[in-house]
Length: 218
Length: 204
Image 1: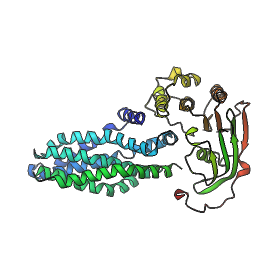
Image 2: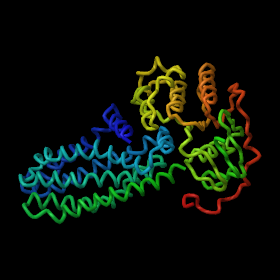
Image 3: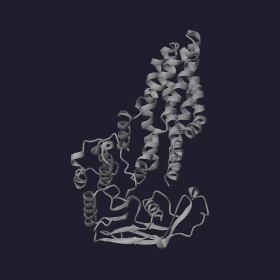
Image 4: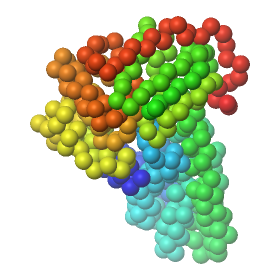
């Protein structure tokens, strides 16, 4: 399992590994928003938490089809399936590797990009916390979507359509927590809901992902 | 008995391709599957490897004892030859990769990224992976594709050593490997009558 994690991390940082893909997309979105909506500080500050959350979610979505498709194409998924690793473990490690290479950099970059959107000072901590709680759910749900579409050539569109509705609750509660934090309101309820979504997804979805992957490997 | 298959029926994409297949594979023996293209050799091998469920019948002695090598080698282009092999050794819980590198003549290539290897060299690396799995039953699907005569000889020698140490091999190949331990098993007589599957196999 650790071997698989180190291999995936190593592949991600080598040339063509897609480590910077999500991060670059996140940066582009947040840099472009002020150009699009105008430089008015009050307006930017109001939409900043939502924009940062949407940017992080789309950046995450962009890299989903790499989770399993590359291993499927070169045959290593077949070989992993015959290896002495449980399929649930394989998909969990894949999701963890995706979070470490995409989710975690997004969490760490978000406060820096918050400056570009004049996020109020009180908002930074809660933005960070909400993203840290929410992005694991994005990775796990995304791995489930990737497992569903793994056998399809160019299944990216189908993957996005399948995953987007599942992402909506995470986005609603994540952005709500970040918004309330920025406005100095109580953040407890949305944060608890967000943590609950993440915990539930992490606990249940690896079993679903493993089941659909077994069917797709036939 | 290493591997025992009884009355196996397999299907591909919901269409039965082979039925009533029975064979035994003893330790130290190799079984070579023969049959025209599309006769179900790959499906049979994938079923034995546990990648898809059997329609009917039993397979004994498979599961965690199988090392499978399919049409693609499962190599990562950006990892070196050593890194690729060491990864599989770690996954299968073994340590030694130097024997595998030597037996498939990969030592000179060990620091090259796998993506820069030729097709035959990639295939050799894919086959070297079998040696680091430490598993007794090799299930090989067209292992000699894109290998030259010298590499086929290397592969045959590796299979022979594996058989001598008590392993066994089940393979689909059209090339004569010169293995005196090998028996030929023609799958043509077991061709299933063409009909649609009774249920959607995904929900069996």
